[in-house]
Amino acid sequence: MRVGSVTSTQDIARELPVGSIVVADHQSAGRGRLDRRWEAPPGTALLVSFVLARNRNPVLSLAAGVAAAQACGPNVRLKWPNDLLLDDRKLGGILVETNEDKAICGVGVNLSWAPAGAARLEQPRDEVLERLRIEIDRWTAAPQDAVLGRWRELSATLGRRVRVELAGQTTEGIARDIGPLGELIVDGEAFVAGSLTHL
Image (tube, rainbow, N blue to C red; front, side):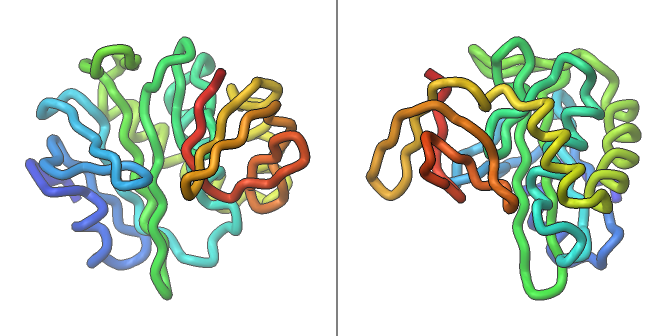
C-alpha cells in the first residue's frame, strides 16, 4: 500500500493483516525508539512498515537491521540496537512494535536529504524498497544463529568503547558481543535496551 502523507506508516500498518507493506511519501509524526521524532521532507526518504507474524524470529529487530543494511549496500553498518550508519553517521533506523499476533517493522532511510550530521544514501527509493522487501523476507525467516552472526559482521558497535544510558543509569565500557536474544554485552553486563553512544 502506497500512501501520501500519514502520521506514521506504523499507525497504518497496525490495522493491516500479516504480509502487508505500507510505504509513505511523508510522515507528520514519524518516530523512532524512545519516542524520538523522525523527520524528513516529503519524498526524500524511504518510509516503510512491514506487517510480520509475531513468532517469525526471536531476534526480529536485529534481523530487520541486517536486512536493511544489506538492502542499502556494502558500506552500511549497524549500531546497536537499531540504527543504520554510513561513514559512521546515522543513515536510518528500525522500529519494531509487537502485539498479540503480529509485529510491525518500520524502516526509515535518508535518501536525498538528511538532518545536519546525518548521512543520505542517494539511491532511488523504489530500488532500495525492492531490495529491502527481499532481504526482510530472507532475514526474518533465517535461523537465529545466522542473524546474530551476520549482525556481528555488520556491527559498528562491537569492539568499541560505548556509553549506555538506561533508566537514569549510565554505564561505560567496551561492547564485547551480543547475546542470544540480541542483548548488548558491555564488559560482562547485558543490556536489552538503552540509549547507546559510541565513544
